[in-house]
Image (cartoon, rainbow, N blue to C red):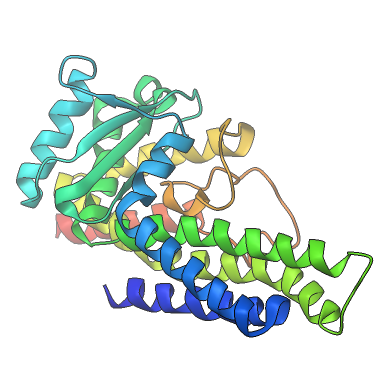
Length: 279
């Protein structure tokens, strides 16, 4: 909860600073009000926005009996309330969890994931997402997605203003902000993503008692992510997925702004956990 609060404060400060640059004192107050509104909206509705963005459809025991059965059993074993389950209409396999707390959580899987994975692999993936719920990752992860979008929007606004005909003395600063804001959004995502993925992998291994199920699933997921891209994938929500939907896009900054540890390292750690569990 502390990380979430600090993230919200950071958004307010960033908005106030650039509001002051663009509109002086009045701009700062307007930015403060806007940032507070985004914070409030994000806390209660950010999960709905993400699910809507990916056109996720709520599933039931009747429509997705295997997924429902696995989630129900994992919830019981983890001591968590049953989350809502959703299916994203996309052939590229992937999954994510969202919500503001365990009582208001949701687990979403793409149709491709449900088709590609064996039951054991699917359980490994869903256990990973349930571990995010158990570790209270879902709120900050979902809010970070909304904040990243808001910061990128602010950067775009600054760039447009700095390129206008009547430039003012803050134009250079606003141009710098337009460059730095997307980077700031990436840093926010990166700072909350890598460690929590390792923890969720370990949580899944101990919840299922079969680390090899998730190891096999990660191998398949990485192969697909390297060759196919999800239709609605965007950089603001990439950190929410079990594997980065942009894994196949390489650049000089890909490792610096990676939202996930390498799949090879994740599989290696899971293999170590497996050996430990067999002792």
